[in-house]
Amino acid sequence: MAEQSAKRSSFGGKLTAILAAAGSAIGLGNIWRFPYITSENGGGAFILIYLGCILLLGLPLLVAEFAVGHNSKSNPVDAFSKIRKGWGWLGAAGLISVTLIMGYYFVISGWTVNYAVASATNSIGSDYGGFFNNFTTAVWSPLLFTYAFILANHFIIMGGVQGGIEKASKYMMPLLFAILIALAIYSVWMPAGREALGNIFTPDFSKVSGKTFLDAMGQAFFTLSIGMGAMLIYGSYFKKGTKLAGTAISVVSLDTIVALTAAVIIFSAGVEDANGPQLAFVAMPKVFSAMPAGNIWAMLFFLLLGLAALSSTISMHEAVTSYFVEKRGMSRKRGAWLVTIVAMTLATVASLSLGVWSGATVAGMNIFTLLDNFTAIIMLPLLGIMTALFVGWLWKRESMKAELTAEGGVDKATYPFIRFLLRWVCPILVSVVFIFGLVDFISNL
Ligand code: PHE
Image (cartoon, rainbow, N blue to C red):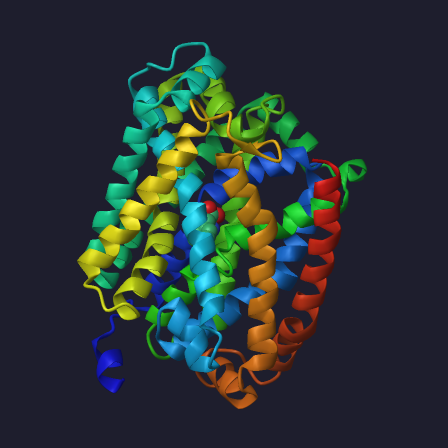
């Protein structure tokens, strides 16, 4: 075992650890999902509930997940079973969920590439909804972009922890922040934008229901990549002495700033009319088209989405690849190919379910929507509850305390508070929100 851990790679330093984990957190969840979920749920009211979920549930769970990875220095399945025999299935459940997420996430990621290219070459035309529908329901073109995106992932993963993931994060994240800041300045500069901005951040409590809380919690877990093995595997690559709590606070802060800024950019463009998942793809090109050098701004926007997606998908891919390498004894190349092929297969089904296979539905949802809802509404809360119970109750008290306080950067005074959140607040609150939200969701199907 000592030999195995000696061979295991790690991130070079504290900053790169933060950049990689922030890369996992910041993704389509922040820029594509957060704005439209916010607008569907009454704007400001939703944002308040969401911030509550991030602080009370997301942050302690992120620390917990880092701790499990860092302590065990293992892939998600071995990590849980090393800490407590018989619990490897919890890691496996996370890996299955993240695989299902990859199924639809890669499809949207592929769209961002097509949109960046089409914006740059001015070939979207003036029928934005039509372009979106024609493209996303077609058979081959969305698939080709999706496959290209998955292959880009594949080659980063093949580059290994330092040569692939860390290096990619080091270049991608600063670029992502720069584009985000430029777009934010650009959008609040427009007067119509500032007005729309006021509207969206004004709380409308009449739209709040049980489902609002479930949506807020699901979004908080999704955006922090909780329970899926992605943060666990990154935690396992943190060097000895990396402050887990400090890293988690940095990641949560960056993630929240990006989500709020993305909402500002999108809502300041005055796009309340565009519905749901189409918000970023239909409304944004339309808004940009009316502006000077609009196609360049549109291209930057889709580049931003693509970069965010790429830095997230590499953490998903790595979580599953690490399992095949460490637990199943495959070479990194073989393990990575296996994950790539599974991701391509699922993404093919998800992409076609928007077009030629749209007739195949479950409870009125096509496969694409089903993958999104099943993971965000059901799997994420369940994994959140189980992770909290595991770390709070099943992990040997002294060992958990040592992980967090000795090296993890949690001082002795804060530790009991985190422990209390993980033992009581997380499991109870997440269960209550889960049950009420689910009842609400099902009764509205
Ligand atoms: N956090 C990512 C986002 O917001 C999604 C993600 C989920 C990444 C699960 C890794 C694991 O887009």
